[in-house]
Image (cartoon, rainbow, N blue to C red; front, top):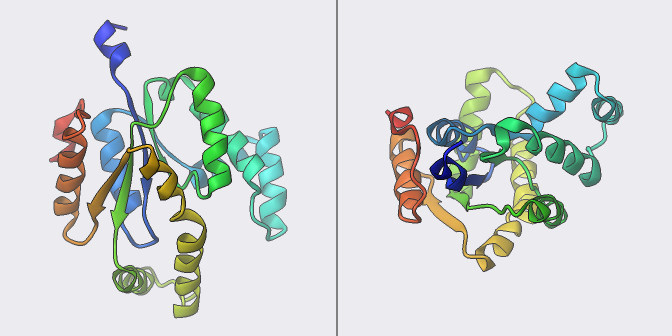
Length: 208
């Protein structure tokens, strides 16, 4: 590893309400910066499929219809972040979801001398999120995505997840992005804002 490589840091969190496009944008950011995209849902599935001890705990909780508690979620994320491919960076999607998980993430990163470089906040009006989710439900034939279910998901985001942005704003690392527009327009805004902070992708071609 060269000194230039060791100095490179790309540790991101992408945050936005359901329907904001953060999953799609997260894939593009991770590819451009050559870091893994780490989503809690993927971690849960990988551990359940792999039959790990943590995975067995997750499976029993999900099968009981309960939410995976913060302590277990944080343990799973910490295990994933400790893997070699995340040593020089990562993009978190779906974690941390609340202030408790922010504290857990800090407790993992700080002893390693690491910290988030930027929190990408995709701002999308509630009405736009609802319209996108409604359209996606129609396109995917998801009859369970009713108006009530969609509204409840957004309410949970606004109540539990949005407040973590206050924590990161106080640290001066939130990059606020207008999430309304075409995929390319939003992607361009993200990379221009990151570049303004001295965070340049290692694979610019991934944006094409």
